[in-house]
Image (cartoon, rainbow, N blue to C red; front, side, top):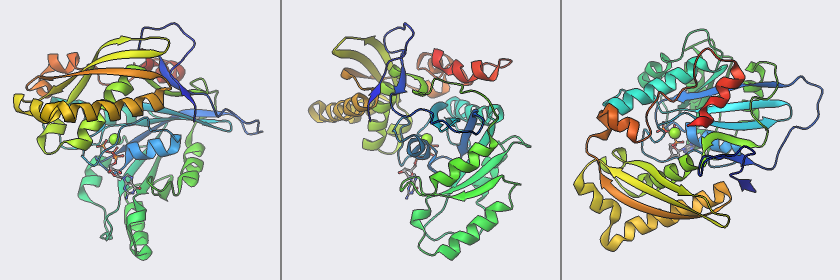
Length: 347
Ligand SMILES: Nc1nc2c(ncn2[C@@H]2O[C@H](COP(=O)(O)OP(=O)(O)OP(=O)(O)O)[C@@H](O)[C@H]2O)c(=O)[nH]1
Ligand SMILES: [Mg+2]
């Protein structure tokens, strides 16, 4: 699908938002609805995979490692006269450092601000008919009184459907959910019903974003994230958790944009792992990230990536700011809902 990084306003290089050209509202009698839905749940349950599946675009990075997502990322989906502002969030977990605490704050803060919450859990291939304790703990971060849709993901893994029904029945007792929806984000099963249930919970109103916007994040965010994704996919153990990627320069050209990035690793010894023998690993990371970024953003890119050890950055308030984890990732309070939803674009 055609994509462009363009938006109409004048902007600094790399600050333009990702947008979609296709789509748009089809005329219908129902009144327009628009609102925010926070996707929350434990790490690794498939929140970002679900966001991408609903949008039909891979805007959020995903991996088999827990705690892949570190920011709130809005994905904008307009179907008929309903605009869903889907807010992907970091997985709720027991934090071990400042970064982890910030990630939890972003997730629970986003749930508190949103019009509706999509609480996501996943099922094992052979699931026990009970609520997982970690899910119960994560659910406590959802403010009481919110409309919540419980979504049970990865049903493609379950062979015995009677077991799945038992899991659904157990989780349904956790709260007075607006709906309980089994899905497979990977196979895109159950997504139409999910959207129908979420749509009922959104307030009536005009779209919060232009209909061809895809996300609230600037282009440079996606380039940095796609580099981080390749590192998550290609490294193991403690290396991926200690990686942050910053954009140092973004030179926007008509035919080709040049992006200079730094990969920050937690230890000197991790540098060699990311660079690889003769620089092979870094070259592979760069090529794969560039290809994905070009596809998403609809522009040709040249990535210039260096690797630097920044020990302890995830526990250092000053370094967290330097590396882009400055605020709590939330839109400012005391604002109209329209301004709130748009605020993320300014980062
Ligand atoms: N079998 C199966 N795997 C899935 C499904 N959805 C997601 N996954 C896998 O689950 C893993 C985690 O997916 P993510 O989307 O990164 O999970 P997340 O909840 O965003 O994780 P954090 O960002 O760490 O909180 C990845 O390996 C996905 O491929 C699904 O429907 N079925
Ligand atoms: Mg995620």
